[in-house]
Amino acid sequence: MNMDPQTAQQMLQSQLQPWHEAVAAPQKAQEEVLHRLLQDYAKISYGKEHGADKIETLEDYRKAFPIATYEDYKPILDRVMDGEVELLLWEPPIGWAITRGTTKGESKFIPMTPTDLRMRVSAGRAVMNYIATSKRFDIFMGVNLNLNFPSVVGTVKMGDREVEYGYSSGIYTKHVSTKTPVRSVPSQEEIDALGGEKTESAWERRFDLAYEKCKDENVTLVGGVCPTALRFARHIRKKHKEYPKDLWKIQVMTLGSVAGINTRHQPALNALYGDAAIREIYGATEGMFGQQRDEKRAWVPNYDLFFLEVHTRSGIKMLHEMRPGEMGSLVASTPILPRYRIGDIILASQPPYFRCIGREEWWTPLRYAWDELTSLNLGQL
Image (cartoon, rainbow, N blue to C red):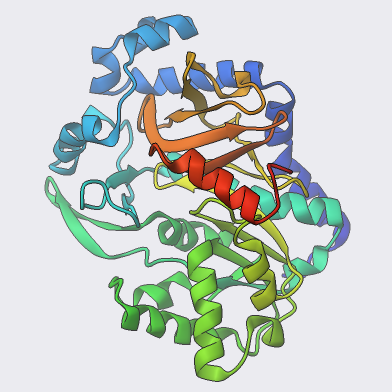
């Protein structure tokens, strides 16, 4: 897209300003988010059962709404999928997002609503901020190499209608990419047409599609799942004897889904894709909770969108109240799930920087410490 620098800068600032203001005053932003969420929770059965319309303080909220995992929510989600939408949703779902990982051997199913989808635009804040600060507006002249998962894997029957389910990144790309300045290639519809299988051959077909569609394009941006980006690069090297850095002058990569993107995976990414800036996205199927803001290799929360708590050794506290070096399990309140325990361990650095160091397992801190030692990062941002 051809956009003059002044117009581009104004567009970027309008998108980024709510984030920057919330980061500067997290307590105020979180109070506003909680108030907004409670208004929506008061419209659903789950919220009415917990007295959402009577809650006035954070203490009230914590007393009324328990922290809940996916397993806790699953019986309600099953009923929502059977058509009892009002139990958790105050607006009809546009589809269901499934996880790439598994919970007890099964993919998690999370409904996506129009409000939820609008909030996922925040995933673009990392590249927006990069462009706004670097003044590299020529990124808009290129395309985004789309390596996302399929947006449609199948359908589920909700009451009397069929609703599609797929991966959240693909659903987001399909619904939002037409409204963003950088075109995604291949299109999500072209990816979906190849089917929703996760086999090696299915991924090779997707990678071949991306290569054929993009080999003659000006690819300036790569966004998506970090392991998929690495697999794609190795695939085209094996099959076509070329690295992505031989084909394109990629300026920035916005990647998520694993810990250590800017540390453990950075050498491989730059070896394959060239001297591109790497910006980490932190999110899950349930929402996009933060993204990298600058050269510091950590993400900054979306305090203006989600209500973010953390369960630490000293008890439950707000994410923005964590001390540098403190760890805890993230508890996010989203438009769909109040006080949802994601299952990720968060490490606080100097405010407002955080890292997700992995899943909630006893060995995760040990693995993180080992990775920091072997990569000689030693906790540095």
